[in-house]
Length: 245
Ligand code: FPP
Image (cartoon, rainbow, N blue to C red; front, top):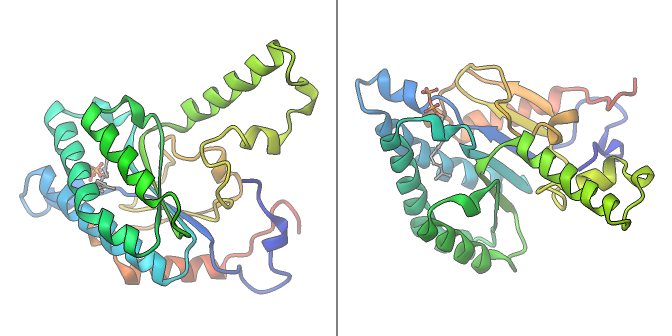
């Protein structure tokens, strides 16, 4: 996951992003503006997930990582959490055939094994059905928190050091990244957050070290092929220096 200077262009803008991540924000405000319940915004949000993952495939994006439920989202009212889990079940049931036929590899990051048993079984089955697909990869972050991901990696390395199987001196960025859930994915190139908020909310904190950040005002339910293409266009005009000149 290290920033890859080999992909830094010698002049002009950046080559197309291989890995794009999105903090899908603004479902609630989309619903509120229409005097609708929040669940209506989340339903439109799922339509946007469908639309945008198709568009990302068309644009040749290798990995699309979507922040669907954070480890902090449990603080929402019980009814909303239940609705979000219901939408997730529906998404898995209704989209899996298309993901399989399109060759998409589904990955889930976060503490998703802590979700309810039936959902864990559905996710397990969905991952198993797509595991041999060539890609692109759709990564859904569920019950995900970057700090917890980093802590878990640090803990595993510390345990290996304690057991004498790892020399602490050998822990460098690459060794650390190998312990993260995104270990075998291409480096994160572009991180988009919708709805005008400008923060990372505990999402991919390590991976975002050299990512381009893009904050767009569009609410997630309104995000579509055109807004994604516009975001990719903006990325292309950025100069990525990876600490160089
Ligand atoms: C943020 O909007 C959105 C979420 C916390 C959930 C995102 C979930 C989906 C798009 C649907 C489920 C996803 C999949 C992959 C099936 P918000 O509710 O915080 O909006 P607000 O800030 O306007 O209130």
